[in-house]
Image (tube, rainbow, N blue to C red; front, side):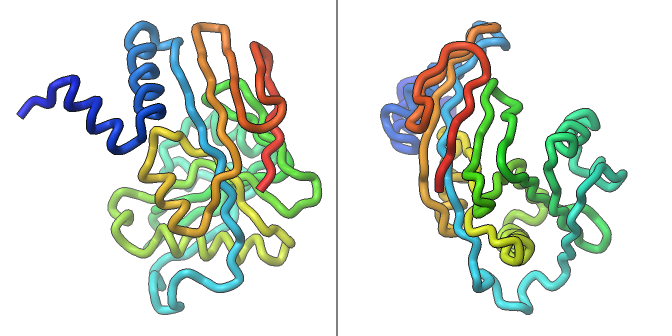
Amino acid sequence: MTIKPLQRLQLLVRELGALTAILYATDQLLRRISPRCKLVYYRFVAQPVRDQPRLAPHRGKGFEFQLLRRAEPTLAALDRPPEVIQRRFAQGAHCLMSTKQQTVVGCIWFMQQAYLEDEVRVEYVLPSDGRCVWDFDVFVQPSERLGWLFAKQWDAFDRLLQPLGVRYSVSRISAFNQRSLASHVGLGAHHCGRALFLCLGPMQWMVSSVYPYLAWGGRPRLSIRP
């Protein structure tokens, strides 16, 4: 059964809300006009580092976790371009890699202080007191998405951050991805800002709820606070 355009719009409004649905439809139209045109809408969320694990100790016992500070051959299993991996480590990023029976099944990338976004031209800046890290590219293999790995991976991440005095892990999520937003909220995350980017070829305009609020061109530095 083919879904008509009006029905598709009604489904989007029901899932995303009227304003976000209109922005999503605009983004899809721009991308059809040119691959260099898009409308990117981010929500920023801060997830508290928990003192108590989400899962009982016997849940997800088959998973192992390893902190990587430099590129290793095992990261090829994540299907990320080698130059992207090298650029992340050059920025100072670390990767918490999840394995099951020596097979890579997930990861969480993170870094402190600042992060250069790779989808639009912007830099996210965190408070300098060391209480926050920026997490990105959180991944779970499709075969593990209905199991314990998602929560177990975050428990391992919390254990890693607690001794460092980190209290929040901050990230950006596409406002068009309601599943991911709901997953983070389900883990205790709260919203702490938003930003909208209009990209037309080499030109970029930004409107944000956090400083500096408005930007045209360049690479604005957004100050994200939990």
